[in-house]
Amino acid sequence: MGEAGWGLFSYIYRMESTDVCILGAGPGGSTAALHLAKAGVRCVLLDKAVFPRDKICGDALSGKVMSELRRIDEDLPALLPHRTDALPSRGIHFIAPNEQWLSVPFQESSSVLGKNGAKRPVVALDEDSANEPLPAPGYLMRRVDFDNLLVETVRRTPLIDFREGDAVTEHTPVSDGWRIGTASGKTLHAKLLIVANGAQSAFTRHVAGIDPEPKHFCAGLRAYYEGVQGLDANGYVELHFLEPFLPGYFWIFPLPNGAANVGVGMRSDAVSRQRINLKTAMLDLIGTHPTLRERFANARLVGDIRGYGLPLGSRRRRLSGDGYLLVGDAAHLIDPFTGEGISNAMISGRWAAHQAVQSLQANDFSASFLASYDRAVYRRLGNELRISTRLQRLLAYRWLFNLVVRRANRNPALKQLLSAMFDDIDLRASLRNPMFYVKLLFA
Ligand SMILES: Cc1cc2nc3c(=O)[nH]c(=O)nc-3n(C[C@H](O)[C@H](O)[C@H](O)COP(=O)(O)OP(=O)(O)OC[C@H]3O[C@@H](n4cnc5c(N)ncnc54)[C@H](O)[C@@H]3O)c2cc1C
Image (cartoon, rainbow, N blue to C red; front, side, top):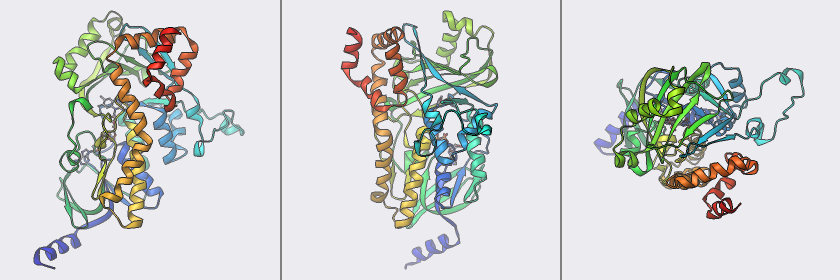
């Protein structure tokens, strides 16, 4: 071994070391850490923020999030009905470009699935649990609270060494893994890195070589309001597909205590093409639109209007390489039609933990071995992301959207079908099929 080799050896020898280090303790990173712990594997979980911390988001937790919570711990979803910071969400109001409303309830079934997907009895057998409220199909919960719920679970897990308030500033490949450096000057050696540090991940750009492309990236704004009129009592979220935000949308999501999460999301290439200032356009819509103006007449903006990016999964990427796995927003996995990213972060976090266990057993952290992580993630999410990409493109045809809404409002069977589509990916695929629209036209 030469001098440089010995120098490196002694440097690493004195350095603290771990098998797996996870960057970022959002839903993706926390989920990965919790699944590793379930498999009996220790890890170090690093986050620059001190929790509870805010994350700019619509705060909507889908049925997929509920199933991922259940996979972490059967009892986690059952906590939500008891929390005053979580509002049950039972459906979506779509507002078409011609301003017709279509209200689609979520299927209740996904919320009552028990272990291994088996249906739990809707009427409980013993008296105590008969009084237990069942979790709703979805929830609305500020991210400051939801992410902290996961982090509290992390804190109770002895196998996770959670270190917060210290940003990762360096990730240097060394012969048998990575040297991680933090803002406070600490260093750590890890065999495998799980990179879950969100949409602005420097690792994703500079090491994995994935740049944000305007066509596959969305700009988002979020504002909290109090006093918005006409919020849905059943926690239906409102997606307004209106100009000038198409192919994106303006949203109003009810929150506990009469508050609302209000925002817009629009593809970055469309933002540049139309030279639109999203904040001005959103305030303009709220202030001038005939019905929205009335609903916001006595509303009060609480805090600032804040923006953040959404890396969309409309293009397949390489999610792993020598010694690393990308998770969640750092892997560009947000649904291109709905903007939903929490569940996909949790799903990829779960698969990253699974892959880490395989790699540790085989002592193989090579790019070729880790590629089975990519296959697992895309086997689960690939079809869904492809369909959502097509649906996002269909938004260019406003008349088609208007047609679907008009017909569904007249036809309960079609409405039921659209509702079932949220759970059933094969059904959703029919929206890609031109015959679906031909049948609609002539039905
Ligand atoms: C405006 C907007 C609205 C959205 N609405 C919804 C919605 O309603 N529902 C939904 O499901 N999804 C929504 N999304 C998407 C969702 O917010 C993300 O997909 C989700 O947060 C991804 O989780 P994550 O764990 O990958 O990353 P994040 O939640 O971003 O977590 C990353 C973590 O990494 C930490 N970190 C970053 N850099 C470093 C560093 N250098 N060192 C250490 N730690 C670091 C951060 O502090 C953070 O805690 C929305 C996004 C936006 C922008």
